[in-house]
Length: 255
Image (cartoon, rainbow, N blue to C red):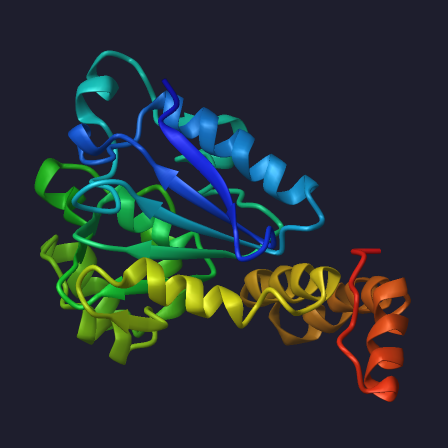
Protein backbone atom coordinates (compact mmCIF):
# COMPACT_ATOMS: atom_id res chain seq x y z
CA UNK A 1 0.00 0.00 0.00
CA UNK A 2 1.31 3.43 -0.97
CA UNK A 3 1.91 5.85 1.88
CA UNK A 4 2.36 8.88 -0.40
CA UNK A 5 -0.25 9.57 -3.07
CA UNK A 6 -0.05 11.88 -6.08
CA UNK A 7 -2.79 13.39 -8.24
CA UNK A 8 -2.65 15.99 -11.00
CA UNK A 9 -4.87 19.03 -10.37
CA UNK A 10 -5.45 22.49 -11.85
CA UNK A 11 -5.79 21.16 -15.40
CA UNK A 12 -2.73 18.96 -15.02
CA UNK A 13 -0.38 21.81 -14.15
CA UNK A 14 -0.02 21.09 -10.42
CA UNK A 15 0.63 17.89 -8.48
CA UNK A 16 -1.26 17.26 -5.25
CA UNK A 17 0.89 15.06 -2.98
CA UNK A 18 -0.75 13.44 0.04
CA UNK A 19 0.99 11.91 3.05
CA UNK A 20 -1.23 8.85 3.53
CA UNK A 21 -0.62 7.36 6.97
CA UNK A 22 -3.56 8.91 8.86
CA UNK A 23 -3.66 6.17 11.51
CA UNK A 24 -0.03 6.99 12.36
CA UNK A 25 -0.61 10.77 12.24
CA UNK A 26 1.30 10.75 8.94
CA UNK A 27 4.52 9.98 10.80
CA UNK A 28 7.49 9.57 8.47
CA UNK A 29 9.26 6.24 8.05
CA UNK A 30 11.61 4.93 5.40
CA UNK A 31 8.79 4.05 3.03
CA UNK A 32 7.41 7.59 3.16
CA UNK A 33 10.85 9.00 2.37
CA UNK A 34 11.40 6.62 -0.56
CA UNK A 35 7.98 7.19 -2.08
CA UNK A 36 8.16 10.96 -1.62
CA UNK A 37 11.57 11.09 -3.33
CA UNK A 38 10.24 9.10 -6.30
CA UNK A 39 7.16 11.32 -6.65
CA UNK A 40 9.27 14.48 -6.54
CA UNK A 41 11.56 13.05 -9.23
CA UNK A 42 8.45 12.53 -11.37
CA UNK A 43 7.32 16.08 -10.58
CA UNK A 44 10.58 17.50 -11.89
CA UNK A 45 10.53 15.25 -14.96
CA UNK A 46 7.03 16.29 -16.08
CA UNK A 47 7.36 19.69 -17.74
CA UNK A 48 3.59 20.17 -17.71
CA UNK A 49 3.73 20.34 -13.90
CA UNK A 50 4.98 23.64 -12.50
CA UNK A 51 4.11 23.39 -8.79
CA UNK A 52 3.53 20.73 -6.14
CA UNK A 53 1.23 20.88 -3.11
CA UNK A 54 1.87 18.66 -0.08
CA UNK A 55 -0.88 17.86 2.41
CA UNK A 56 -1.62 15.23 5.03
CA UNK A 57 -4.54 12.80 5.03
CA UNK A 58 -6.70 12.74 8.13
CA UNK A 59 -6.39 15.01 11.14
CA UNK A 60 -3.06 16.64 10.43
CA UNK A 61 -0.10 17.30 8.14
CA UNK A 62 2.53 15.19 9.91
CA UNK A 63 3.70 14.40 13.43
CA UNK A 64 7.27 13.98 12.20
CA UNK A 65 9.50 10.96 12.55
CA UNK A 66 7.91 7.57 13.20
CA UNK A 67 9.62 6.87 16.52
CA UNK A 68 8.55 3.22 16.61
CA UNK A 69 10.08 2.64 13.19
CA UNK A 70 13.19 4.55 14.23
CA UNK A 71 13.70 2.27 17.24
CA UNK A 72 13.51 -0.70 14.89
CA UNK A 73 16.26 0.74 12.68
CA UNK A 74 13.97 2.14 9.97
CA UNK A 75 15.29 5.64 9.24
CA UNK A 76 12.99 8.28 7.71
CA UNK A 77 15.54 9.48 5.16
CA UNK A 78 16.37 8.75 1.53
CA UNK A 79 19.90 9.04 0.19
CA UNK A 80 21.02 12.68 -0.18
CA UNK A 81 17.44 13.96 -0.10
CA UNK A 82 17.33 13.66 3.68
CA UNK A 83 14.34 13.51 5.99
CA UNK A 84 11.02 12.68 4.37
CA UNK A 85 12.69 12.29 0.98
CA UNK A 86 13.18 16.01 0.37
CA UNK A 87 14.03 18.06 3.49
CA UNK A 88 17.73 18.25 2.58
CA UNK A 89 17.50 18.25 -1.23
CA UNK A 90 14.14 19.17 -2.60
CA UNK A 91 12.84 19.27 -6.14
CA UNK A 92 13.57 22.00 -8.67
CA UNK A 93 9.82 22.60 -8.90
CA UNK A 94 8.26 24.94 -6.30
CA UNK A 95 6.33 23.30 -3.44
CA UNK A 96 3.45 24.54 -1.28
CA UNK A 97 2.66 23.02 2.13
CA UNK A 98 -1.03 22.91 3.06
CA UNK A 99 -1.25 22.39 6.83
CA UNK A 100 -4.31 21.30 8.77
CA UNK A 101 -4.30 20.04 12.36
CA UNK A 102 -0.61 19.82 13.15
CA UNK A 103 2.87 19.99 11.65
CA UNK A 104 5.31 19.24 14.42
CA UNK A 105 8.90 18.05 14.65
CA UNK A 106 9.82 16.56 11.27
CA UNK A 107 6.38 17.52 10.02
CA UNK A 108 7.21 21.18 10.42
CA UNK A 109 10.65 20.53 8.93
CA UNK A 110 9.02 19.16 5.78
CA UNK A 111 6.77 22.21 5.62
CA UNK A 112 9.85 24.44 5.98
CA UNK A 113 11.42 22.58 3.05
CA UNK A 114 8.56 23.85 0.90
CA UNK A 115 8.72 27.25 -0.78
CA UNK A 116 5.32 28.47 0.41
CA UNK A 117 3.25 27.55 3.47
CA UNK A 118 -0.51 27.75 3.98
CA UNK A 119 -1.81 26.84 7.44
CA UNK A 120 -5.22 26.61 9.05
CA UNK A 121 -5.65 29.16 11.82
CA UNK A 122 -6.02 26.44 14.49
CA UNK A 123 -3.08 24.29 13.35
CA UNK A 124 -0.40 23.33 15.89
CA UNK A 125 3.15 23.97 14.69
CA UNK A 126 6.37 23.44 16.61
CA UNK A 127 9.70 21.68 17.06
CA UNK A 128 9.36 19.57 20.25
CA UNK A 129 12.61 17.66 19.72
CA UNK A 130 14.26 19.10 22.84
CA UNK A 131 11.54 17.45 24.92
CA UNK A 132 12.83 14.08 23.64
CA UNK A 133 16.56 14.86 23.94
CA UNK A 134 16.85 15.36 20.19
CA UNK A 135 17.47 18.35 17.93
CA UNK A 136 15.56 19.35 14.81
CA UNK A 137 18.29 18.14 12.48
CA UNK A 138 16.03 17.72 9.44
CA UNK A 139 16.58 21.34 8.43
CA UNK A 140 14.33 22.93 11.05
CA UNK A 141 17.04 24.76 12.97
CA UNK A 142 18.97 25.73 9.85
CA UNK A 143 15.96 27.15 8.02
CA UNK A 144 14.47 28.95 11.01
CA UNK A 145 17.81 30.66 11.64
CA UNK A 146 17.79 32.00 8.06
CA UNK A 147 14.15 32.99 7.76
CA UNK A 148 12.93 34.59 10.99
CA UNK A 149 14.41 36.71 13.80
CA UNK A 150 16.85 34.85 16.02
CA UNK A 151 14.91 35.24 19.25
CA UNK A 152 11.71 33.91 17.69
CA UNK A 153 13.61 30.95 16.26
CA UNK A 154 15.25 30.36 19.64
CA UNK A 155 11.90 30.33 21.43
CA UNK A 156 10.55 27.74 18.99
CA UNK A 157 13.64 25.53 19.21
CA UNK A 158 14.42 25.82 22.93
CA UNK A 159 10.95 25.62 24.46
CA UNK A 160 9.65 22.92 22.14
CA UNK A 161 6.20 24.47 22.52
CA UNK A 162 3.57 24.98 19.85
CA UNK A 163 3.60 28.42 18.26
CA UNK A 164 0.36 30.16 17.19
CA UNK A 165 -0.13 30.28 13.42
CA UNK A 166 -0.84 34.01 13.62
CA UNK A 167 2.56 34.59 15.25
CA UNK A 168 4.35 32.67 12.50
CA UNK A 169 2.43 34.64 9.90
CA UNK A 170 3.52 37.90 11.55
CA UNK A 171 7.20 36.96 11.32
CA UNK A 172 6.86 35.89 7.69
CA UNK A 173 7.13 32.11 8.01
CA UNK A 174 3.60 31.46 6.74
CA UNK A 175 2.20 32.91 3.51
CA UNK A 176 -1.53 32.43 4.04
CA UNK A 177 -3.79 31.67 7.02
CA UNK A 178 -6.88 29.65 6.15
CA UNK A 179 -10.06 28.91 8.04
CA UNK A 180 -9.98 25.44 9.65
CA UNK A 181 -10.60 22.84 6.98
CA UNK A 182 -9.76 25.26 4.15
CA UNK A 183 -5.95 25.02 3.97
CA UNK A 184 -5.97 22.90 0.82
CA UNK A 185 -8.43 25.22 -0.93
CA UNK A 186 -6.25 28.20 -0.01
CA UNK A 187 -3.13 26.37 -1.23
CA UNK A 188 -4.84 25.55 -4.52
CA UNK A 189 -5.79 29.20 -4.90
CA UNK A 190 -2.16 30.18 -4.32
CA UNK A 191 -1.00 27.52 -6.79
CA UNK A 192 -3.42 28.91 -9.37
CA UNK A 193 -1.44 32.18 -9.20
CA UNK A 194 1.70 30.26 -10.11
CA UNK A 195 0.68 27.76 -12.78
CA UNK A 196 0.31 30.30 -15.61
CA UNK A 197 3.93 31.38 -15.25
CA UNK A 198 6.85 30.04 -17.29
CA UNK A 199 8.27 26.74 -15.94
CA UNK A 200 11.92 27.61 -16.62
CA UNK A 201 11.54 31.02 -14.98
CA UNK A 202 9.89 29.45 -11.91
CA UNK A 203 12.65 26.86 -11.61
CA UNK A 204 15.38 29.47 -12.05
CA UNK A 205 13.79 31.88 -9.58
CA UNK A 206 13.47 29.14 -6.95
CA UNK A 207 17.10 28.11 -7.46
CA UNK A 208 18.41 31.64 -6.88
CA UNK A 209 16.09 32.32 -3.94
CA UNK A 210 16.98 29.17 -2.00
CA UNK A 211 20.73 29.65 -2.51
CA UNK A 212 21.04 33.44 -2.17
CA UNK A 213 21.67 33.43 1.58
CA UNK A 214 24.57 31.01 1.19
CA UNK A 215 26.08 32.77 -1.80
CA UNK A 216 26.04 36.30 -0.39
CA UNK A 217 25.53 39.32 -2.62
CA UNK A 218 28.93 39.40 -4.36
CA UNK A 219 29.00 35.68 -5.20
CA UNK A 220 25.27 35.75 -5.89
CA UNK A 221 25.71 37.85 -9.00
CA UNK A 222 28.16 35.30 -10.39
CA UNK A 223 25.98 32.30 -9.56
CA UNK A 224 22.84 33.99 -10.87
CA UNK A 225 24.32 34.79 -14.30
CA UNK A 226 24.15 31.27 -15.83
CA UNK A 227 20.62 30.84 -14.49
CA UNK A 228 19.59 34.16 -16.07
CA UNK A 229 21.22 33.22 -19.37
CA UNK A 230 19.57 29.80 -19.49
CA UNK A 231 16.12 31.30 -18.90
CA UNK A 232 16.44 34.46 -21.01
CA UNK A 233 17.85 32.56 -24.03
CA UNK A 234 15.11 29.92 -23.94
CA UNK A 235 12.28 29.42 -26.41
CA UNK A 236 9.86 30.29 -23.61
CA UNK A 237 11.49 33.71 -23.14
CA UNK A 238 10.91 34.49 -26.81
CA UNK A 239 7.35 33.17 -26.50
CA UNK A 240 6.73 35.38 -23.47
CA UNK A 241 7.82 38.52 -25.32
CA UNK A 242 5.90 37.51 -28.46
CA UNK A 243 2.71 36.76 -26.55
CA UNK A 244 2.95 40.10 -24.75
CA UNK A 245 3.36 41.96 -28.05
CA UNK A 246 0.47 40.03 -29.61
CA UNK A 247 -1.73 40.50 -26.53
CA UNK A 248 -2.41 36.81 -26.03
CA UNK A 249 -1.73 34.16 -23.40
CA UNK A 250 1.71 32.53 -23.76
CA UNK A 251 2.08 28.84 -24.52
CA UNK A 252 4.98 27.51 -22.46
CA UNK A 253 7.02 24.51 -23.59
CA UNK A 254 9.58 24.34 -20.82
CA UNK A 255 12.52 24.84 -23.15
